[in-house]
Length: 351
Image 1 (cartoon, rainbow, N blue to C red):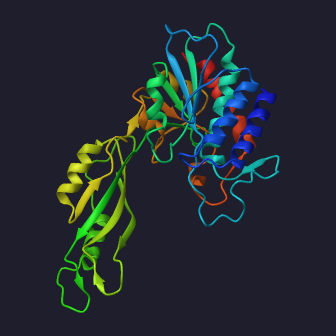
Image 2: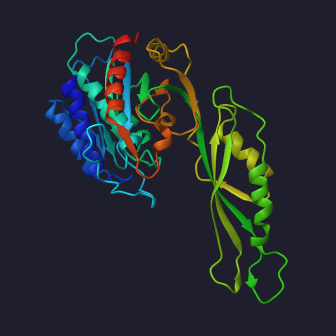
Image 3: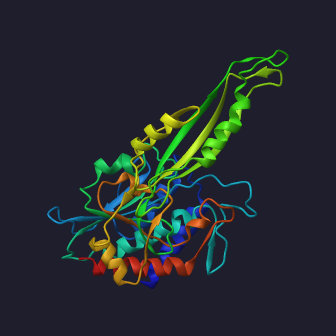
């Protein structure tokens, strides 16, 4: 176990040193394949996603998926150090993707290696190092599920402080448009779309969603982008803005689209509707095994590849969600150590 933990930490340092923005994961995929090869484990791949099955895979048994992603967002301008430098500390691993979700990825890979050769397991194990999670791209976990064996349950690795996220909010992204009449700035115009912005912002800020989900609380709607105009003397024809809506378990995405489009004082167009909220029963064996190890349960406000799955799943991993996408991201080595040991215990105890 100690050698396996050291090997996974070393891999994480390599992954951080290797840029892997969504859609550009070729080099990290190669590192992951090499790591498995060094542990004498054959892999398969589609695009940049890499996966493996346990040595004694038996199609008559149920299959547990171990999944996390190798892609990252781009570093923000507030970084005070090189985002691709993991540092030399023995206790802290720094850099882009260390917390989201490199720590979870290498811990799940190490856990898979621990069980790879074991015979007479009550279930199969499949590990997937997926891509394009941050952008929900066509080649993400959703895009490769048809290549995998039938999945009966899943552990999705994301930073949860090794607590059990048994539900997570869905996501709707809207392109919003405030329409008006274009014209020359020198002439009167009572239909300037820029002057309608306060009304729309007030509607967004004060809109009340009636349903509070039992596991995920209220829906959260946030204005994240706004743009209009091309030059100083031209009144634009429209204002474009973007809404980020985190959907609870009280609504389906399609219900919220209909609700918001009917009431908005502007034009709202959803980019997609497939990233619904998800949840798992507290009586599911995965959850019960985690609770037996002293893990708490909660509903997560962030989206993950859980949204791609149609089987029961938990989100569980080392690190803190609040570190994700922030400047100077990091994870502690002891968090990875704890994760590998807890993943291993959970799977051993799983009935």
